[in-house]
Length: 154
Image (spheres, rainbow, N blue to C red):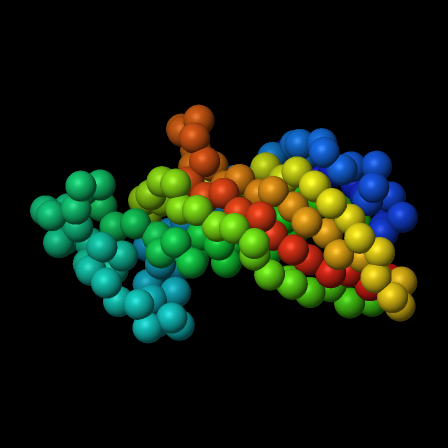
């Protein structure tokens, strides 16, 4: 997929209300899920016990943690957007998050972004509000929807 080029903070307002093209696909592997379990301390069997998941899970396989799916947002956003380097960029928060479907191990996911608001900040900064929908390959419904906030300083 071609990235959407946004030429810095001043260009952001031109993209308000527009669905950007989806990012490239990213595979969510069992190794990623296991590493996330180690980092987060969330060792629930539905995520890490492949054999038990085959037997007992309604999905018949392990699934990614919801917070792992959220954590992919930075990688997916980078795969979707091309902007000149900023002096500083930070995740500022989430207003809403819904986990609307499972992400089985081995799935591929991508994000569709829609910029809903841009507010100017002091020191040549902006606060961006994005609606982000993460989709699993083969499904028309998102597996995660979120309203995210980011700040960028040029």
